[in-house]
Image 1: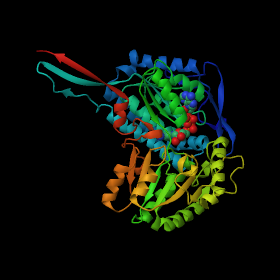
Image 2 (image 1 turned 30 degrees about the vertical axis):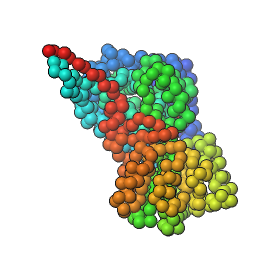
Image 3 (image 1 turned 180 degrees about the vertical axis):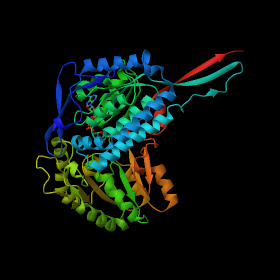
Image 4 (image 1 turned 120 degrees about the horizontal axis):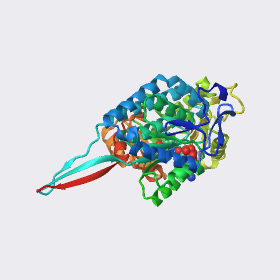
Length: 489
Ligand code: NAD
Protein backbone atom coordinates (compact mmCIF):
# COMPACT_ATOMS: atom_id res chain seq x y z
CA UNK A 1 0.00 0.00 0.00
CA UNK A 2 2.74 2.44 0.98
CA UNK A 3 4.22 2.18 -2.52
CA UNK A 4 0.99 3.57 -4.03
CA UNK A 5 1.10 6.73 -1.95
CA UNK A 6 1.95 9.81 -4.03
CA UNK A 7 4.96 10.94 -1.99
CA UNK A 8 7.59 9.71 0.44
CA UNK A 9 5.87 9.95 3.81
CA UNK A 10 8.92 9.18 5.95
CA UNK A 11 10.37 12.64 6.27
CA UNK A 12 9.63 15.74 8.24
CA UNK A 13 9.52 19.26 6.83
CA UNK A 14 11.86 21.86 8.29
CA UNK A 15 13.11 25.11 6.74
CA UNK A 16 11.52 24.30 3.39
CA UNK A 17 13.37 20.95 3.19
CA UNK A 18 12.23 17.34 3.55
CA UNK A 19 14.59 15.44 5.82
CA UNK A 20 14.80 12.37 8.02
CA UNK A 21 14.19 12.65 11.74
CA UNK A 22 17.46 13.31 13.58
CA UNK A 23 17.20 9.86 15.17
CA UNK A 24 16.49 8.24 11.79
CA UNK A 25 13.54 6.48 13.38
CA UNK A 26 10.07 6.07 11.90
CA UNK A 27 6.57 5.13 13.09
CA UNK A 28 3.91 3.10 11.26
CA UNK A 29 0.52 4.47 10.26
CA UNK A 30 -2.33 1.99 10.08
CA UNK A 31 -5.25 1.87 7.66
CA UNK A 32 -8.26 1.63 10.01
CA UNK A 33 -10.46 0.13 7.28
CA UNK A 34 -8.48 -3.12 7.24
CA UNK A 35 -5.81 -2.85 9.95
CA UNK A 36 -2.95 -3.02 7.42
CA UNK A 37 0.26 -0.99 7.63
CA UNK A 38 -0.36 2.08 5.48
CA UNK A 39 2.84 4.10 5.59
CA UNK A 40 5.84 5.03 7.69
CA UNK A 41 6.26 8.53 9.07
CA UNK A 42 9.18 10.25 10.76
CA UNK A 43 9.46 9.86 14.52
CA UNK A 44 10.34 13.45 15.37
CA UNK A 45 11.84 14.14 18.79
CA UNK A 46 13.18 17.11 20.72
CA UNK A 47 16.18 17.61 18.40
CA UNK A 48 13.80 17.95 15.45
CA UNK A 49 11.56 20.34 17.36
CA UNK A 50 14.67 22.42 18.21
CA UNK A 51 15.57 22.55 14.51
CA UNK A 52 12.00 23.44 13.51
CA UNK A 53 11.71 26.25 16.07
CA UNK A 54 15.10 27.63 14.99
CA UNK A 55 14.01 27.53 11.32
CA UNK A 56 10.78 29.34 12.16
CA UNK A 57 12.71 32.00 14.09
CA UNK A 58 15.09 32.51 11.13
CA UNK A 59 12.12 32.82 8.76
CA UNK A 60 10.89 35.73 10.90
CA UNK A 61 14.24 37.41 11.59
CA UNK A 62 16.19 36.92 8.37
CA UNK A 63 13.93 35.18 5.86
CA UNK A 64 11.55 36.18 3.11
CA UNK A 65 8.57 35.43 5.37
CA UNK A 66 9.42 38.08 7.94
CA UNK A 67 9.82 40.71 5.20
CA UNK A 68 6.50 40.05 3.47
CA UNK A 69 3.77 42.65 3.72
CA UNK A 70 0.36 41.52 4.99
CA UNK A 71 -0.97 41.74 1.42
CA UNK A 72 1.79 39.45 0.14
CA UNK A 73 1.13 36.98 2.96
CA UNK A 74 -2.53 37.01 2.02
CA UNK A 75 -1.68 36.26 -1.62
CA UNK A 76 0.42 33.25 -0.59
CA UNK A 77 -2.40 31.91 1.59
CA UNK A 78 -4.88 32.40 -1.24
CA UNK A 79 -2.54 30.57 -3.63
CA UNK A 80 -2.32 27.70 -1.11
CA UNK A 81 -6.12 27.60 -0.98
CA UNK A 82 -6.35 27.38 -4.78
CA UNK A 83 -3.86 24.51 -4.86
CA UNK A 84 -5.77 22.67 -2.15
CA UNK A 85 -8.90 22.97 -4.29
CA UNK A 86 -7.04 21.41 -7.23
CA UNK A 87 -6.11 18.45 -5.02
CA UNK A 88 -9.38 17.77 -3.19
CA UNK A 89 -9.64 14.26 -4.62
CA UNK A 90 -6.09 13.28 -3.62
CA UNK A 91 -6.56 14.71 -0.13
CA UNK A 92 -9.88 12.88 0.30
CA UNK A 93 -8.22 9.60 -0.75
CA UNK A 94 -5.37 10.09 1.71
CA UNK A 95 -7.81 10.91 4.51
CA UNK A 96 -9.90 7.83 3.68
CA UNK A 97 -6.82 5.58 3.92
CA UNK A 98 -5.36 7.25 6.98
CA UNK A 99 -8.35 8.33 9.13
CA UNK A 100 -10.93 5.88 7.74
CA UNK A 101 -13.12 8.78 6.71
CA UNK A 102 -15.68 8.15 3.93
CA UNK A 103 -14.60 9.96 0.76
CA UNK A 104 -17.44 12.49 0.78
CA UNK A 105 -16.44 13.60 4.28
CA UNK A 106 -12.76 13.87 3.31
CA UNK A 107 -13.72 15.98 0.29
CA UNK A 108 -15.72 18.28 2.55
CA UNK A 109 -12.70 18.62 4.87
CA UNK A 110 -10.37 19.47 1.97
CA UNK A 111 -12.79 22.10 0.70
CA UNK A 112 -13.02 23.52 4.23
CA UNK A 113 -9.20 23.67 4.37
CA UNK A 114 -9.21 25.67 1.12
CA UNK A 115 -11.93 27.92 2.52
CA UNK A 116 -9.86 28.67 5.65
CA UNK A 117 -6.91 29.63 3.46
CA UNK A 118 -9.11 31.85 1.28
CA UNK A 119 -10.70 33.47 4.32
CA UNK A 120 -7.43 34.12 6.14
CA UNK A 121 -5.71 35.10 2.89
CA UNK A 122 -8.32 37.80 2.44
CA UNK A 123 -8.12 38.86 6.09
CA UNK A 124 -4.32 39.17 6.31
CA UNK A 125 -4.28 42.90 5.47
CA UNK A 126 -7.49 43.82 7.27
CA UNK A 127 -6.46 43.56 10.91
CA UNK A 128 -5.18 46.82 12.27
CA UNK A 129 -4.56 48.81 15.40
CA UNK A 130 -6.27 52.01 16.49
CA UNK A 131 -5.51 55.55 17.53
CA UNK A 132 -6.79 56.22 21.03
CA UNK A 133 -8.13 59.45 22.51
CA UNK A 134 -5.74 60.52 25.31
CA UNK A 135 -4.38 63.61 27.04
CA UNK A 136 -3.54 66.60 24.90
CA UNK A 137 0.05 66.58 23.72
CA UNK A 138 -0.01 62.84 23.07
CA UNK A 139 -0.83 60.60 20.15
CA UNK A 140 -1.48 57.03 21.22
CA UNK A 141 -1.80 54.14 18.84
CA UNK A 142 -1.92 50.38 19.00
CA UNK A 143 -0.08 47.94 16.76
CA UNK A 144 -1.21 44.37 16.07
CA UNK A 145 1.88 42.21 15.90
CA UNK A 146 2.53 38.48 15.46
CA UNK A 147 3.51 36.47 18.54
CA UNK A 148 6.54 35.07 16.72
CA UNK A 149 6.95 31.28 16.58
CA UNK A 150 3.62 29.54 17.18
CA UNK A 151 3.28 25.85 18.08
CA UNK A 152 0.31 23.85 16.75
CA UNK A 153 -0.52 20.40 18.13
CA UNK A 154 -3.39 18.74 16.27
CA UNK A 155 -5.32 15.46 16.57
CA UNK A 156 -6.11 12.81 13.95
CA UNK A 157 -9.84 13.26 13.55
CA UNK A 158 -10.00 16.39 11.36
CA UNK A 159 -6.38 17.18 10.47
CA UNK A 160 -7.21 19.27 7.41
CA UNK A 161 -9.83 21.45 9.06
CA UNK A 162 -7.85 21.95 12.25
CA UNK A 163 -4.64 22.81 10.40
CA UNK A 164 -6.60 25.20 8.18
CA UNK A 165 -8.12 27.10 11.05
CA UNK A 166 -5.07 27.33 13.29
CA UNK A 167 -2.11 27.52 10.89
CA UNK A 168 -4.17 29.62 8.42
CA UNK A 169 -4.89 32.28 11.02
CA UNK A 170 -1.38 32.19 12.49
CA UNK A 171 0.28 32.66 9.09
CA UNK A 172 -2.14 35.44 8.14
CA UNK A 173 -0.93 37.40 11.19
CA UNK A 174 2.71 36.85 10.24
CA UNK A 175 3.71 34.16 12.74
CA UNK A 176 5.96 31.24 11.74
CA UNK A 177 4.52 27.85 12.64
CA UNK A 178 5.79 24.55 14.01
CA UNK A 179 3.11 21.92 13.53
CA UNK A 180 2.99 18.54 15.32
CA UNK A 181 0.37 16.32 13.69
CA UNK A 182 -1.02 13.19 15.35
CA UNK A 183 0.83 9.90 15.24
CA UNK A 184 -2.38 8.03 14.31
CA UNK A 185 -2.97 9.97 11.09
CA UNK A 186 -1.02 12.76 9.42
CA UNK A 187 -0.77 12.12 5.66
CA UNK A 188 -2.94 15.08 4.68
CA UNK A 189 -0.83 17.32 6.92
CA UNK A 190 2.30 16.19 5.06
CA UNK A 191 0.47 16.74 1.75
CA UNK A 192 -0.51 20.21 2.98
CA UNK A 193 3.14 21.10 3.67
CA UNK A 194 3.96 20.14 0.04
CA UNK A 195 1.08 22.24 -1.25
CA UNK A 196 2.17 25.23 0.86
CA UNK A 197 5.74 24.96 -0.43
CA UNK A 198 4.63 24.65 -4.07
CA UNK A 199 2.30 27.63 -3.65
CA UNK A 200 5.24 29.83 -2.60
CA UNK A 201 5.17 29.82 1.20
CA UNK A 202 8.73 30.84 2.13
CA UNK A 203 11.06 28.40 3.89
CA UNK A 204 10.59 28.19 7.65
CA UNK A 205 7.13 29.78 7.74
CA UNK A 206 5.62 26.31 8.22
CA UNK A 207 7.53 23.39 9.70
CA UNK A 208 5.93 19.96 10.23
CA UNK A 209 7.34 17.48 12.73
CA UNK A 210 5.35 14.23 13.04
CA UNK A 211 6.04 12.10 16.09
CA UNK A 212 4.64 10.81 19.34
CA UNK A 213 2.76 13.10 21.69
CA UNK A 214 5.03 12.41 24.64
CA UNK A 215 8.14 13.05 22.50
CA UNK A 216 7.66 15.64 19.73
CA UNK A 217 4.41 17.01 21.25
CA UNK A 218 5.83 17.50 24.73
CA UNK A 219 9.03 19.01 23.31
CA UNK A 220 7.03 21.56 21.32
CA UNK A 221 4.71 22.40 24.23
CA UNK A 222 7.63 23.17 26.54
CA UNK A 223 9.99 24.81 24.04
CA UNK A 224 11.27 28.19 25.28
CA UNK A 225 11.41 29.53 21.70
CA UNK A 226 7.65 29.14 21.19
CA UNK A 227 5.56 32.24 21.91
CA UNK A 228 2.02 30.83 21.57
CA UNK A 229 0.51 27.33 21.58
CA UNK A 230 -2.62 26.13 19.86
CA UNK A 231 -3.68 22.69 21.04
CA UNK A 232 -6.61 20.59 19.83
CA UNK A 233 -7.15 17.22 21.47
CA UNK A 234 -8.21 15.53 24.66
CA UNK A 235 -8.82 17.23 28.00
CA UNK A 236 -6.04 15.28 29.72
CA UNK A 237 -3.40 16.24 27.16
CA UNK A 238 -4.71 19.80 27.02
CA UNK A 239 -4.05 20.14 30.75
CA UNK A 240 -0.45 18.93 30.22
CA UNK A 241 0.05 21.41 27.39
CA UNK A 242 -1.36 24.25 29.48
CA UNK A 243 0.98 23.33 32.34
CA UNK A 244 3.93 23.34 29.94
CA UNK A 245 2.84 26.72 28.54
CA UNK A 246 2.56 28.09 32.08
CA UNK A 247 6.24 27.30 32.72
CA UNK A 248 7.14 29.62 29.83
CA UNK A 249 4.25 32.02 30.65
CA UNK A 250 2.94 31.95 27.10
CA UNK A 251 -0.68 32.05 25.93
CA UNK A 252 -2.38 28.83 24.89
CA UNK A 253 -5.58 28.10 23.02
CA UNK A 254 -7.19 24.81 24.06
CA UNK A 255 -9.81 23.20 21.82
CA UNK A 256 -10.82 20.10 23.77
CA UNK A 257 -13.62 17.59 23.96
CA UNK A 258 -17.37 17.88 24.23
CA UNK A 259 -20.66 16.21 25.07
CA UNK A 260 -22.79 18.52 23.01
CA UNK A 261 -26.59 18.48 23.16
CA UNK A 262 -29.26 19.13 20.59
CA UNK A 263 -32.42 20.25 22.36
CA UNK A 264 -35.66 19.47 20.50
CA UNK A 265 -38.89 21.14 21.58
CA UNK A 266 -42.28 19.72 20.61
CA UNK A 267 -43.01 22.66 18.31
CA UNK A 268 -39.87 22.04 16.20
CA UNK A 269 -39.91 21.25 12.50
CA UNK A 270 -38.93 17.59 12.88
CA UNK A 271 -38.49 17.06 9.14
CA UNK A 272 -35.85 19.78 9.12
CA UNK A 273 -34.24 18.60 12.36
CA UNK A 274 -33.95 14.89 11.68
CA UNK A 275 -30.93 14.84 9.31
CA UNK A 276 -29.02 17.15 11.67
CA UNK A 277 -29.92 15.12 14.75
CA UNK A 278 -28.44 11.92 13.32
CA UNK A 279 -25.62 13.22 11.12
CA UNK A 280 -24.12 15.27 13.92
CA UNK A 281 -23.76 12.06 15.92
CA UNK A 282 -22.36 9.71 13.29
CA UNK A 283 -20.20 11.98 11.13
CA UNK A 284 -16.62 10.69 11.12
CA UNK A 285 -17.90 7.68 13.11
CA UNK A 286 -18.77 10.04 15.98
CA UNK A 287 -15.11 11.06 16.38
CA UNK A 288 -15.91 14.75 16.27
CA UNK A 289 -15.29 17.16 19.13
CA UNK A 290 -18.59 18.89 18.41
CA UNK A 291 -20.54 15.66 17.86
CA UNK A 292 -24.12 16.01 19.07
CA UNK A 293 -23.86 12.99 21.31
CA UNK A 294 -26.88 13.92 23.46
CA UNK A 295 -30.35 14.44 22.03
CA UNK A 296 -32.76 16.04 24.52
CA UNK A 297 -36.42 15.87 23.49
CA UNK A 298 -39.51 17.43 25.06
CA UNK A 299 -41.50 14.51 26.47
CA UNK A 300 -44.56 14.98 24.25
CA UNK A 301 -42.38 14.64 21.11
CA UNK A 302 -40.03 11.98 22.52
CA UNK A 303 -41.66 8.91 20.95
CA UNK A 304 -41.94 10.54 17.53
CA UNK A 305 -38.28 11.63 17.54
CA UNK A 306 -37.15 8.24 18.82
CA UNK A 307 -39.07 6.41 16.13
CA UNK A 308 -37.75 8.59 13.32
CA UNK A 309 -34.15 8.56 14.52
CA UNK A 310 -34.32 4.78 15.00
CA UNK A 311 -35.53 4.31 11.41
CA UNK A 312 -32.59 6.38 10.17
CA UNK A 313 -30.15 4.41 12.33
CA UNK A 314 -31.40 1.08 10.98
CA UNK A 315 -30.67 2.32 7.44
CA UNK A 316 -27.05 3.35 8.23
CA UNK A 317 -24.34 1.32 6.49
CA UNK A 318 -20.84 1.01 7.92
CA UNK A 319 -17.83 -0.10 5.88
CA UNK A 320 -14.43 0.72 4.38
CA UNK A 321 -13.74 4.41 3.87
CA UNK A 322 -13.14 3.99 0.14
CA UNK A 323 -16.62 2.41 -0.22
CA UNK A 324 -17.90 5.85 0.85
CA UNK A 325 -20.85 4.62 2.93
CA UNK A 326 -22.55 6.48 5.78
CA UNK A 327 -19.96 5.57 8.40
CA UNK A 328 -16.34 4.35 8.24
CA UNK A 329 -14.26 2.58 10.88
CA UNK A 330 -13.05 4.22 14.08
CA UNK A 331 -9.38 5.16 14.11
CA UNK A 332 -7.79 2.24 15.98
CA UNK A 333 -8.36 -1.00 17.86
CA UNK A 334 -7.86 1.04 21.05
CA UNK A 335 -10.69 3.40 20.10
CA UNK A 336 -12.79 0.36 19.12
CA UNK A 337 -12.32 -1.11 22.61
CA UNK A 338 -13.20 2.20 24.29
CA UNK A 339 -16.44 2.55 22.31
CA UNK A 340 -17.29 -1.14 22.80
CA UNK A 341 -17.04 -0.72 26.57
CA UNK A 342 -19.62 2.08 26.44
CA UNK A 343 -21.88 -0.12 24.30
CA UNK A 344 -21.62 -2.87 26.94
CA UNK A 345 -22.79 -0.35 29.54
CA UNK A 346 -25.76 0.43 27.28
CA UNK A 347 -26.56 -3.28 26.94
CA UNK A 348 -26.29 -3.83 30.69
CA UNK A 349 -28.26 -0.71 31.58
CA UNK A 350 -31.83 -2.01 31.49
CA UNK A 351 -32.21 -1.62 35.25
CA UNK A 352 -31.41 2.09 34.87
CA UNK A 353 -33.97 2.38 32.06
CA UNK A 354 -31.48 2.24 29.15
CA UNK A 355 -32.44 0.56 25.91
CA UNK A 356 -30.57 0.15 22.64
CA UNK A 357 -33.24 1.58 20.35
CA UNK A 358 -31.56 0.94 17.01
CA UNK A 359 -28.23 0.14 15.36
CA UNK A 360 -26.78 0.51 11.88
CA UNK A 361 -25.25 -2.44 10.02
CA UNK A 362 -21.67 -3.27 9.14
CA UNK A 363 -21.62 -4.38 5.50
CA UNK A 364 -20.83 -8.06 4.93
CA UNK A 365 -17.62 -7.45 2.96
CA UNK A 366 -16.05 -5.10 5.54
CA UNK A 367 -12.67 -6.65 6.46
CA UNK A 368 -12.80 -8.30 9.89
CA UNK A 369 -9.44 -6.65 10.66
CA UNK A 370 -11.01 -3.17 10.30
CA UNK A 371 -12.21 -1.22 13.33
CA UNK A 372 -15.93 -1.12 12.70
CA UNK A 373 -18.54 -0.15 15.27
CA UNK A 374 -22.30 -0.34 14.70
CA UNK A 375 -23.78 3.16 15.10
CA UNK A 376 -26.03 2.94 18.13
CA UNK A 377 -28.95 4.97 19.43
CA UNK A 378 -29.51 4.50 23.16
CA UNK A 379 -32.89 5.55 24.57
CA UNK A 380 -34.02 6.31 28.12
CA UNK A 381 -30.63 7.49 29.38
CA UNK A 382 -30.73 9.29 32.76
CA UNK A 383 -28.86 12.60 32.52
CA UNK A 384 -26.37 11.62 35.21
CA UNK A 385 -25.48 8.27 33.61
CA UNK A 386 -21.92 7.77 32.36
CA UNK A 387 -23.24 7.50 28.80
CA UNK A 388 -24.78 10.96 29.16
CA UNK A 389 -21.73 12.50 30.83
CA UNK A 390 -18.56 11.19 29.17
CA UNK A 391 -17.26 11.85 25.68
CA UNK A 392 -17.50 8.48 23.91
CA UNK A 393 -15.87 9.53 20.62
CA UNK A 394 -17.72 6.88 18.63
CA UNK A 395 -21.02 6.67 16.69
CA UNK A 396 -23.22 6.52 19.78
CA UNK A 397 -26.01 8.96 20.64
CA UNK A 398 -28.11 9.01 23.77
CA UNK A 399 -31.72 10.16 23.82
CA UNK A 400 -33.24 11.82 26.89
CA UNK A 401 -36.67 13.30 27.65
CA UNK A 402 -37.23 16.65 29.38
CA UNK A 403 -40.38 18.21 30.83
CA UNK A 404 -39.84 21.98 30.72
CA UNK A 405 -37.55 24.62 29.29
CA UNK A 406 -35.79 24.94 32.64
CA UNK A 407 -35.31 21.17 32.75
CA UNK A 408 -33.85 21.22 29.23
CA UNK A 409 -31.34 23.95 30.15
CA UNK A 410 -30.35 22.14 33.35
CA UNK A 411 -29.69 18.86 31.50
CA UNK A 412 -27.98 20.56 28.55
CA UNK A 413 -25.59 22.41 30.88
CA UNK A 414 -25.17 19.44 33.23
CA UNK A 415 -21.88 17.98 31.99
CA UNK A 416 -18.27 19.05 32.52
CA UNK A 417 -18.14 20.20 28.87
CA UNK A 418 -19.40 23.25 26.99
CA UNK A 419 -18.49 23.25 23.32
CA UNK A 420 -21.58 23.46 21.09
CA UNK A 421 -25.37 23.19 21.42
CA UNK A 422 -28.27 22.93 18.99
CA UNK A 423 -31.83 24.11 19.67
CA UNK A 424 -34.90 23.21 17.63
CA UNK A 425 -37.99 25.32 18.24
CA UNK A 426 -40.21 27.72 16.28
CA UNK A 427 -40.70 29.96 19.35
CA UNK A 428 -38.55 33.06 18.81
CA UNK A 429 -38.47 34.17 22.44
CA UNK A 430 -37.45 30.68 23.53
CA UNK A 431 -34.69 30.67 20.90
CA UNK A 432 -33.22 33.81 22.45
CA UNK A 433 -33.60 32.58 26.04
CA UNK A 434 -31.84 29.31 25.21
CA UNK A 435 -29.09 31.05 23.27
CA UNK A 436 -28.26 32.99 26.43
CA UNK A 437 -28.81 30.19 28.95
CA UNK A 438 -26.68 27.49 27.32
CA UNK A 439 -23.11 27.39 28.64
CA UNK A 440 -20.98 26.71 25.57
CA UNK A 441 -19.04 28.40 22.78
CA UNK A 442 -21.51 28.08 19.90
CA UNK A 443 -25.31 27.78 19.83
CA UNK A 444 -27.09 26.78 16.64
CA UNK A 445 -30.81 27.51 16.38
CA UNK A 446 -32.75 25.35 13.93
CA UNK A 447 -29.52 23.98 12.44
CA UNK A 448 -26.40 22.35 13.78
CA UNK A 449 -22.92 23.45 12.76
CA UNK A 450 -23.99 25.94 10.07
CA UNK A 451 -22.16 23.83 7.50
CA UNK A 452 -18.81 24.29 9.23
CA UNK A 453 -18.77 28.07 9.01
CA UNK A 454 -15.09 29.05 8.84
CA UNK A 455 -16.22 32.63 9.55
CA UNK A 456 -17.77 31.70 12.90
CA UNK A 457 -15.61 31.89 16.06
CA UNK A 458 -15.31 28.45 17.66
CA UNK A 459 -14.15 27.13 21.01
CA UNK A 460 -15.38 26.02 24.37
CA UNK A 461 -15.99 26.82 28.00
CA UNK A 462 -15.44 24.58 31.04
CA UNK A 463 -13.55 21.39 30.13
CA UNK A 464 -14.04 22.05 26.43
CA UNK A 465 -11.21 24.57 26.61
CA UNK A 466 -10.64 28.28 26.15
CA UNK A 467 -9.66 30.72 23.46
CA UNK A 468 -11.32 30.99 20.06
CA UNK A 469 -10.29 29.82 16.62
CA UNK A 470 -12.04 30.35 13.29
CA UNK A 471 -13.42 33.62 12.02
CA UNK A 472 -11.82 37.01 12.56
CA UNK A 473 -11.59 36.34 16.28
CA UNK A 474 -8.73 33.88 15.72
CA UNK A 475 -6.63 36.67 14.25
CA UNK A 476 -6.70 38.48 17.58
CA UNK A 477 -5.66 35.29 19.37
CA UNK A 478 -2.75 34.78 16.99
CA UNK A 479 -1.44 38.31 17.52
CA UNK A 480 -0.49 40.58 20.35
CA UNK A 481 -1.28 44.26 20.90
CA UNK A 482 1.40 46.87 21.45
CA UNK A 483 0.49 50.35 22.68
CA UNK A 484 2.63 53.26 21.52
CA UNK A 485 2.25 56.60 23.36
CA UNK A 486 3.98 59.55 21.67
CA UNK A 487 4.35 62.81 23.56
CA UNK A 488 4.75 65.66 21.13
CA UNK A 489 3.52 68.66 23.09
P1 NAD B 1 -4.82 13.56 22.24
O1 NAD B 1 -4.89 14.62 23.26
O2 NAD B 1 -4.42 12.22 22.64
O3 NAD B 1 -3.82 13.97 21.06
C1 NAD B 1 -3.90 15.22 20.40
C2 NAD B 1 -2.50 15.65 20.00
O4 NAD B 1 -1.74 15.85 21.18
C3 NAD B 1 -1.74 14.61 19.16
O5 NAD B 1 -0.98 15.27 18.17
C4 NAD B 1 -0.83 13.99 20.19
O6 NAD B 1 0.34 13.43 19.63
C5 NAD B 1 -0.50 15.17 21.07
N1 NAD B 1 -0.01 14.81 22.41
C6 NAD B 1 -0.25 13.68 23.12
N2 NAD B 1 0.40 13.73 24.30
C7 NAD B 1 1.04 14.92 24.36
C8 NAD B 1 1.87 15.56 25.33
N3 NAD B 1 2.17 14.97 26.48
N4 NAD B 1 2.33 16.79 25.04
C9 NAD B 1 2.02 17.41 23.89
N5 NAD B 1 1.27 16.85 22.93
C10 NAD B 1 0.78 15.62 23.15
O7 NAD B 1 -6.25 13.58 21.57
P2 NAD B 1 -6.85 12.53 20.58
O8 NAD B 1 -7.38 11.39 21.35
O9 NAD B 1 -5.91 12.28 19.47
O10 NAD B 1 -8.04 13.40 19.98
C11 NAD B 1 -9.33 13.28 20.41
C12 NAD B 1 -9.71 14.40 21.34
O11 NAD B 1 -9.57 15.66 20.69
C13 NAD B 1 -11.15 14.33 21.75
O12 NAD B 1 -11.30 14.58 23.10
C14 NAD B 1 -11.81 15.42 20.93
O13 NAD B 1 -12.99 15.91 21.46
C15 NAD B 1 -10.74 16.43 20.86
N6 NAD B 1 -10.94 17.32 19.71
C16 NAD B 1 -11.32 18.61 19.95
C17 NAD B 1 -11.55 19.47 18.89
C18 NAD B 1 -11.97 20.89 19.13
O14 NAD B 1 -11.84 21.71 18.24
N7 NAD B 1 -12.47 21.26 20.29
C19 NAD B 1 -11.37 19.02 17.59
C20 NAD B 1 -10.98 17.71 17.38
C21 NAD B 1 -10.76 16.88 18.47
